[in-house]
Amino acid sequence: MADKILNKIYVKVWRQNNPTAKGRFETYTVENISQGNSFLEMIDILNDQLIQEGKDPIAFDHDCREGICGMCSLYINGHAHGPDTMVTTCQLHMRKFNEGQTITVEPWRVGAFPVIKDVMVDRTAFEKIQQAGGFVSVNTGGVPDGNTIPISQDDAEEAMDAAACIGCGACAATCKNSSAMLFLAAKVSQFAKLPQGQVEAKRRAKAMYAKMDELGFGGCTNTGACELACPKSISIAHIARLNREYLKAKIAD
Amino acid sequence: MSNFLSASIGRKVFMSLTGLFLISFLTLHLTLNLLLIFDDSGILFNQAANFMATNPMIKIMEPILALGFIIHIIWAGWITLDNMRARPQGYASGDQLLKWWAPSKNMFILGGMILVFLILHIFNFWVKLKITGDPLLANPTGTATQMHNTYALVSNLFINFPLYDALYVLGGILVGLHISHGFWSAFQTIGLSNINWMKRLKCLANLIGIIFAIGFSAIPIYFLLKF
Image 1 (tube, each protein chain N blue to C red):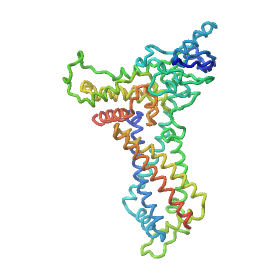
Image 2 (cartoon, chains in turn red, blue):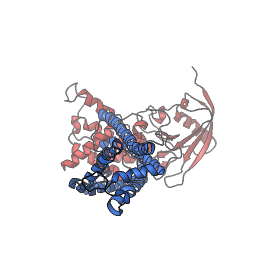
Image 3 (tube, rainbow over the protein chains, first blue to last red):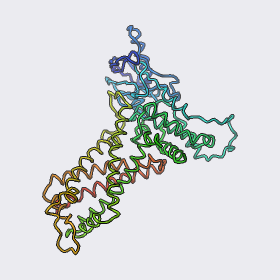
Image 4 (cartoon, chains in turn green, blue):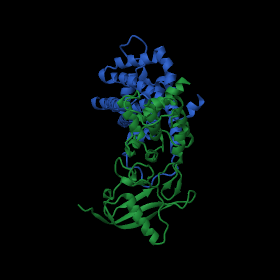
């Protein structure tokens, strides 16, 4: 079945020349977009159009375009990664939009993620949180043989669910407090459930928490918006574990 | 320890613990208040109010309760201001993910409205009982010991002032909404939750919220309809 064609849509997008410039919205008309196109392909088509008109194309982040690298972002019509569930912007299709619709595209609005240009933001803050404690210092070697590590299947699965985090920043972008707690929780949880992660367990949550506060992210008020926006559906139950890990370490101090 | 108190998690732990403490107080408060409905003579309620006013344990708890309220309120402002600073520029397209009325998104507003109600509530009863006194509080007939006729004070307000009835019903609903998020959220913050318990706690939070909302609202409605 052939995909339908959207004859005309309007893309209202945030344009900002550099981190310090004052930004503004510009609205562009895009014609003949297949509903089978991905959202980023639509932006590619719009950018071709802008280049042909001698205008500056829209700067946006993207890489793998198959939902695993965490590079794409975009806050589309009031939703991080657009109005679809469990997908990144690159997996969002134009079939989620209607003929003649105005689509508002904004960068992640998080103080700790400054705009670099247009809808592209600097997410180095997440790297810094990760560097503060999201690692293991033991040599884990190659892929171990089955059943050689003393860990239950349930724990391994839960660690894997947390490890699905691609660090895209949708959690912080969606959170009304711009909190990075779901990211932090995923990064702490993936180690907390594994024997290899126990060596640094006492300092990990404390160090990562302190870094998150230092970078200017807000605190969690348990609205659960992050979980809904997360393209990997990471549960906020991991946030409870993060808090538990932190308080356990703090009480032991 | 100092960095724990100023850290975002430390401040939230304070919110959680004071919140749970205030819920335990409200449970006692509602239980005693329901005596207003179950005994129209007012004797049971007056005895309960007298016990609360004279028991030494309650006297010790009174300033602790006030402190619990003060910490919960001041910390809420501190946390909310910090959280607002984390997003210097908002979204033009707003937040379409959670409903605008979701209690979790409006805890500070709900809390602020409850604070306004609390001040009104203190002026209605506490100030009259403890400071200014009121002719209605004269020793009730049929009691051996000297005590305030608190029942007369409460029933007079609810029978004769329908506007107050409406405000007290609203207050009950606001408290119920606040707790429907606050209860499970408190356990989440102190780490006493997981994927299974989160569902149970959320369910319990809704139940407690509904009980509080209906329980507190039922009292002014009862007086308005019955008398």
